[in-house]
Length: 294
Image 1 (cartoon, helix red, strand yellow):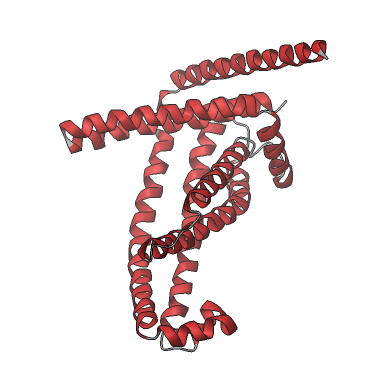
Image 2: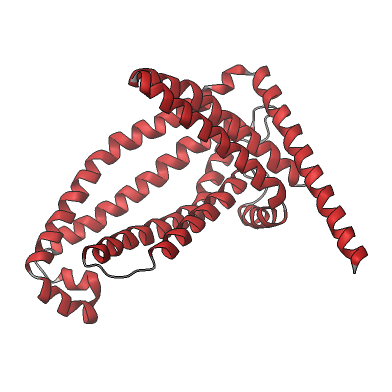
């Protein structure tokens, strides 16, 4: 029994050594690759900026309309609470409002949400696929662009649906928590909050692993490999993600100090630091995942 424990401990130590070695090697390879092609540091960042710009410009008006419809629905709910509450058990929330004067606002509200969801998914996949494609093909051209683009769209369907589930639960939780605090009702706020954090972390964890595999396998195989690597190689991948998180936490603190001096300096400084950090992160992640996917 003692020998088995010692053997297991030795094996775990070897895993840690190999993990640290791989992370160090890939870190060095990433720096070397970037130094050999310095334009890569800022080229993908252009598409990150375009994503934020297009999304902000297109979604702004949609969000304004959504809030207008929410206010109209809330106004009716406040003025006819007993009537709506009576219909919820038999007709559901949507059905309770559908027969009311708010039917027009409810239909438009749901339609606007659908449009916003589709726009968000399309813009994210379009611009992020280009940014990740640059990282994937930094050293050697490994995949055709349009094939990579289409697979990026397909792979993100699952992650986007899971994110929508998380977001919906979070909105409902926020609403119920607010009502509970207003009426001094007890809730399992801490449990729900941390459950949502863990759920979102797992989505991001496996999604980014799958990004590193796009272009290497078929869609189903990518999901399968992402799950297997995420579990079996957690001793390597988790430290990698902690390194990446550490980079952005450091940038965040630097920007806070810069903002104390001048807001515009912080904005300019933010672009100068964030764009290379994102470029480095994508390339480093791909190299590490390809290193463990053997």
